[in-house]
Amino acid sequence: MSKYLSRIAAAALLAATLGLSPPSVEIKNDAFSPKTLTITAGQTVTFTNDDDDAHTVTATDGSFDSKGLDTNGRWNHVFAKLGTYTYFCELHPFMKGTIIVKAATP
Amino acid sequence: MKRASFLEHVAWTGAGIAYTLGSTGLLTGRAIASDAAGTIEFVQISDSHIGFHLPANPDVSGTLKMAVDAINAMPSQPAFVVHTGDITHLSTATQFDDARAILSQLRAPLIALPGEHDVIGNDFKPYLTNFRIPHSTPGGWASWDASGVHYVVLLNVFNFEKLGLLGSDQLEWLRKDLAGIGRTTPIVVFTHVPLYALYPQWGWTTEDGAKALALLQPFDRVTVLNGHIHQIVTHQEGNIRFASADATAYPQPKPGSAPKPGPVTLPRGDLLRAIGYRTVEIDGGNLRFEDSALG
Image 1: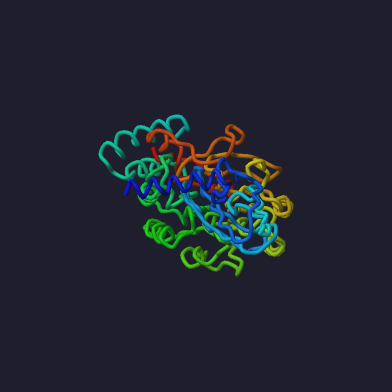
Image 2: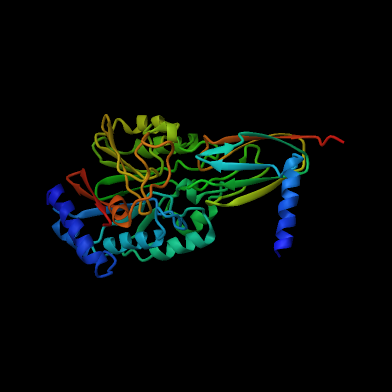
């Protein structure tokens, strides 16, 4: 088991070193961080609510919606199509973020 | 009873009876009601956030039940109990079931408004299934007349990207609804989000609230009671009096006193003094309200 975990840790470290760590957005203090995240098409973004309040990750164009994310809640979304996606928190609409999806470089 | 002695009395019964003996606030409620000067017309509760579980209140069901028990213990039951929204924390089916199980214990009829936490995903259905206001319009808002008062429920939690918005349909309905009401008729309005700009920096405002207030301003006596901010804040604009209510779940910071709004964690005894319910008496068309803490 510990061997298995250490392999995962090693893989994560390698991925981070190569700039391959999975893209993520942290929700804290009524804000999305980073506010703007650029990824390549097909990547999964993990949104994590590290706040003491509930939040949502809701696309302005309606293309995705996490629904209610409780404290410590996590939500993954695959961004398949190119484009610039703005999103907000339905419970705190002043919280806004942007995901820019670019083509993967060959 | 004067405010100071009233509070002292509540505090004593809270400490001496409700908690030491492990009761749920029954005696506290009885003591309040028997000492009240007039007859309680209705009771307001708010922001129960069923499903919330952080240290600010690990037992939100328990504190809502304390409020329900205190209301049920009033010897003269109110005409109704209004819940001004955020019944649940995340709009889940389980949270609605749990909330309904507790609120259905009320002896008086319940009028429950949705808060933004009750319509997450821009989905009105779970709220409507569980708590639709009797005889409400298709949009969910409502009005009725009772005891010489014109009551209005306005919903300002539905617009997706703007919290605190009534919308033109509801404003037009309000204009027509008020057209037949005499100027001296007392009007009581219930909302979730404050109808005026209480603290816009934290979203504690209704963007088109001023339009509703312009329609209400010609009337002699208007009272707007809301939730959302988890604390008592009173305000007056012309003939319109505003009073937000305490939550039954947990308090939030005073406007601007913290970097952001959110749950404030207090020791249990202090928490119970910071949450509660509001009794409202109507005397000759004048509203008198008294806020009672749970501890």
